[in-house]
Amino acid sequence: MSDASVLHSLSDGVARLTLNRAAKGNAFSAAMVAELDSAVDAAIAAGARLIVIDGAGRHLCTGFDLSDLNEENDADLLLRFVRLEMLLRKVYDAPVTTLAIGRGRVFGAGADLFVACDHRIALQGSSFSFPGSAFGIVLGTARLAERIGRDRTRQLLLAGESVPAERALSDHLATQMLKEDEVPSAVEAIAVAAHRLDTTTVTSLHRATDRGNADIELAALCRSASRSGLKAKIVAYREKMLAAAGKQKAK
Image (cartoon, rainbow, N blue to C red; front, top):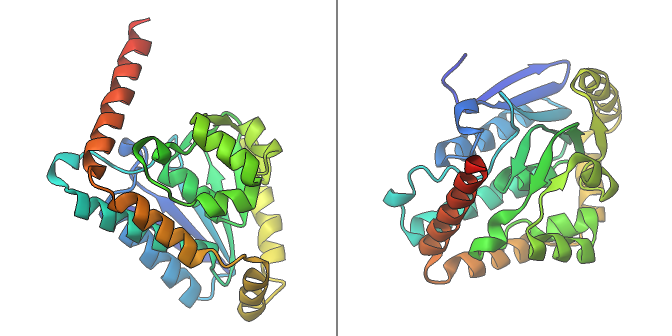
């Protein structure tokens, strides 16, 4: 297996981008965000008509990699969130069809990446969570509201609930719920449709159906992440989650 954080291939107009940090739950390091951003650009430049985003191992993506949190400061974290938002917007606005395969735990930044894609396959047994609000971050909220509606978005984020695949489908967070062995035929069908329109038309359709939230999303993120104590809030959240996990194991 390659040491690259993102594996990529292109065949018959279908680009496959695989997050490749399975040992870390495919959590986003700063380098991985940069690699995925470049891979999306390269796929479009090479003539891809469908970009499929998947994760190696058990999970699509379990959020931000916070293993180096002790070495970060508030400014570093703000920059990481901004670069992530720019990547998510690039995927959302891509001039080609995008597809994410939600496997295992799809949390935080991983769930935001899932939401950014046109087609969103939730594998049976997967779950989705958006914990950023627990440490004061507003990331991808308008895109989520576009998918599942304002009221359900507020309910989900305020409660901090984890959404199983079945509920993700009924909420329209996912566009399909499939078994693993059903994915290849679904991707093939989506690829056929993706070749139907040229990139200029796809771009026009995206613009016509978007409510112009790009600047709003970025401004909301920057306001939330610029408040003092960002790192302290993330540290407190991480400690709370570790304590909860320890109690669960002790039962």
